[in-house]
Length: 399
Image (tube, rainbow, N blue to C red; front, side):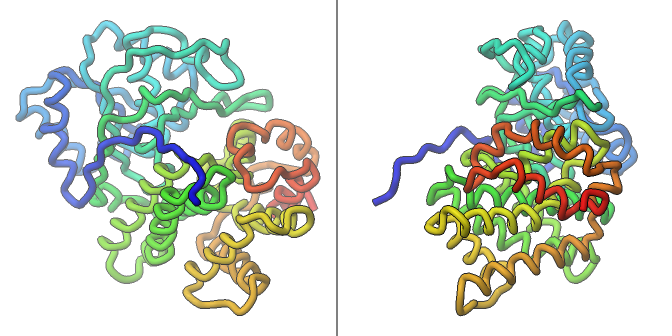
């Protein structure tokens, strides 16, 4: 008998090469005045930006732009609200990577409300309940990693030793549409492909073994893992059909966003929040560099004290999917999975934590701030010592 489960709201989805051409038609459903949120440079320097803005001009839209440089902070969001709240914006369209999409969500959520965004940030704000209304929002990702186009989270950062990386979270922030055009990924450089791709893979794996996983999310995560298996390394290494690889990774990232929004994540993302807040390390790099170590610690912990945990069987199944072979024992499958994750980490040239200044002296501070919402759905509750071991395995300075 299936256990009860629930599926939260997801966006309407337009997927496929050339789908960016549907933006004027979709935007017209919400009004005539648009705020386009973009990254600092890459989109504006591409031919795609010229085509997008020309199509909006041809359709008679009034639009203005807002550039987001780096990961969005509460101050950035508050300044954007102050600058554009009186502009009678009908629709916010975010065209960019995960940081741009997160910024767009937060701005859309507060343009009509006007409150400081920190009022609504989990764990650091005043705990004020968000009631909206939100301005309509369309997400157009130009990278394949975070899956933010499918979630209700807007992740904001305050960098520094006493900083934070927290979510403004509400179902009203879910985009009306997620418009995914793999052609927009064509200019992604290999380091970004690697980091974002491993973020998507980690989200798929963590949602598959999450304590809140259900049959629907399992099926979706499985499909996403299969797509990432077949496309991430070929895209990164420039092998084979690059159009097909980009399409598959755009799909994998989208599915990772859908599944994480339903199930939560795990220890990698639990650690990613403090690491991303305290050190200048990109989110995808954290995920990619920690996923093998975190998987190893999870398996060891379950074997030690929860030998019947269903995630052990799931890890063995993922090994067979990613390695494309059957294993005679679960032990062989787990070892093959860990070897494959280690191999991908090396082939994708993902940095270690000490490359960003992390040392053993920082571990207690990181661990103390790692038990946010993501850690709560890890398949097993890890001790501080086990979380520290995850860090040690990817920090030469901490061994």
